[in-house]
Length: 283
Image 1: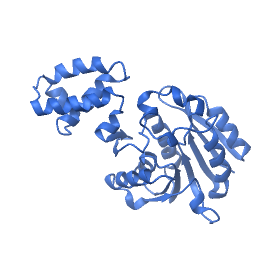
Image 2: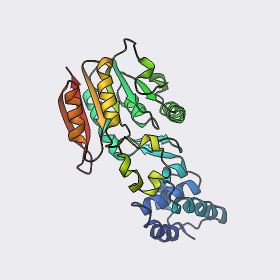
Image 3: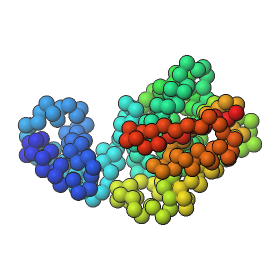
Image 4: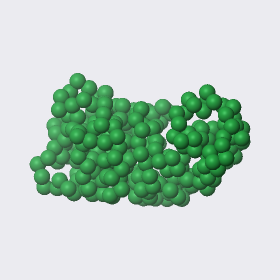
């Protein structure tokens, strides 16, 4: 089969389980052909795959047909122009979260010696991106699980910012409880799916991505309440508290921040027009 044949055939096959079937096929082809650049596929669209290459692709696409996310199959995902290693046990970075990162970068530009705390390391997408794109940033990254901290460290090294990041095992603020440590920015993309909605998630999410990185309590707001309430003693005056939120949570999270003394609260929409980010300032 040629690359063109495979793209046509398996884009149709993956339509039932993927919103981006052709992209999925092209990414799997990249892996099957030896981690080649995607442009190679388009330039060599009429290339015949060898028997070994075709067998490798079929193995990968069979995994995808079962519902396993492409990012876990190929072991990486692009975010903010950077390649992030991912594996089961860490949440896969999503384009929605770039809105949060971009807003923090904008707020911190031209400032010196910015200290940032990211609660919930995941793959390290937020942590590493902020360290990469904010020149004078020093980032601390908390996670309660070992796998995200391990993956985050790998991605920090790969992006050349490991000297700007401290990865710490911590249940929210437990590792600094009672210590006089304050940050200029506290950011989090916490679990925010209501418990009742977990079973309605797409198979590739609910069956493969870590449950504890998704489920946010009965109404999805547990972590916003806990982080906001505890953050007050760990954030400087005029410091920034920044969240990613679920598609219908911006108003409720804004109110939680307001009740805890945060001011100048505003929201930002993602590329789909959904209020995805909530920002507040400690006065």
